[in-house]
Length: 349
Length: 264
Ligand SMILES: Nc1ncnc2c1ncn2[C@@H]1O[C@H](COP(=O)(O)OP(=O)(O)OP(=O)(O)O)[C@@H](O)[C@H]1O
Ligand SMILES: [Mg+2]
Image (cartoon, rainbow over all chains, first blue to last red; front, side, top):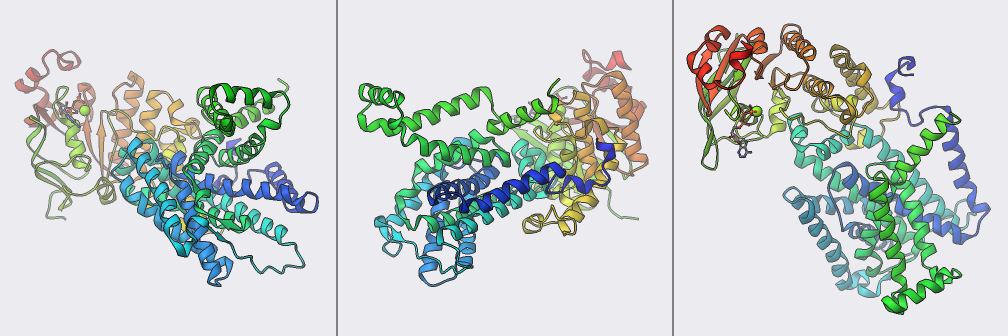
């Protein structure tokens, strides 16, 4: 109960209570010991999930918390990835290349934020879309970035107690993801995060209480791009090879789907959305191999689309899921999670 | 004391297309005064507030606060200068709790940078210390307005009367020198309105804040105001003490068919 709280600091703490702390510790411990139990393939999936979590955190800050829109976040991921690879090739240590990726991406974010001060809704959507497309097109024409052929990502020189390279990468990515989650959680609960949400709910009132709208919108774009750039840096690292087509418009849409499915404006939502949708997308790639259903979908595709259109099945399903979310659970997976929690709290009454 | 007037509006003009919403309006407000603006619907009252707090740019005139010109400043700069307001049609942060709404009133007094806020969950961090310090101030406001039960609720789930109080609380959290209240009692029950009158008096008497009030309820205006400005079609009808203004024939005429005769 409220009155029993000894200090207001309990509202700022990372963990609400002992139970919360315990389960968080269990989860983190499990994630850190995982490499000893599973095949590298599964680590790759976890890496991909983690990278998507980081992008989703940033995008959700912009879309869910600040009420802006971006259809071009793949562009920031690309900027982060290419910055990292370029610097690694120049012999810069990874830690600096990683920070640079975030910073460069954030600068581009602020740059893209400037038109957002004048544009709203669909117009901003189009501006960000154009940005995303421009980034990959330009990269494709720059020979020193490998052009459309792409380029190899130099391997890091990691010698940590005889750790395998894949395992080491997994640990780097996992640690950074955990830090990203904590950082985002603290930012959102602070005066900065509250200001973002104020702008989302009423920009008139936000200005009237002293929030500099221009500055905070640019902060939001910058921070959002910083997370995307950092994610791009990590993605490049474990992919080992990057080219412009990786960062397509479809990827930007995929990020949006993640946060809508997970729950707009919620960190738990960003995590759940990224994990579930990454898994789903991987599974749907093999949809034709599913007995009966696969054959049926193949037939469907043959009649109504082309047989090569079978790959679109995953998009049709994603669209279908989105419609369900918007209709029945606007808070997404986070909403579902809240309901279950309330259910179990009341159980068995 | 100061040579200049505390707050002064000089020959203010604001039009929308052909419509002169505010026309050559001229008045001043003294420190620690409760100053009311009355007038029929569409008289231009809210437009005056919107000009004062920088949402609208007037075509002509001056708005001086402690000798400083406000016209041309952004709303956030005007808030920094010490002017807070509430809105006629609630502008709350609907998807946030009462606590967060009022904490947002502390925003401009808090200094933590983005980088500093990353450390918020660590007790020794500067961000946490600052947050707790301001949280205490907010809890005082919650106590003052008796909003304890609403503290952790999303404001969109609160009854209308409570929402109005949250907006007042958020404005108070700015610790302003001048508070603009746009119809704070509209839509309230009789009991809630009486509470509101007490609070507004307390805000002036205990907190020493100057108040400019827009209000349609004449009983309340008469009860609470030191001076009243009556306007119609954006221009002044008269200005003076409640007795002078509310008995002025042109004020009564402007309100003919409205609620003035019945509530006086
Ligand atoms: N943003 C705007 N654009 C166009 N016209 C406006 C705008 N704001 C106000 N007006 C017009 O200016 C006039 C004055 O409006 P205002 O809201 O200031 O009246 P008011 O005195 O506050 O009335 P009420 O008692 O109904 O709140 C009205 O005719 C209104 O339609
Ligand atoms: Mg009005």
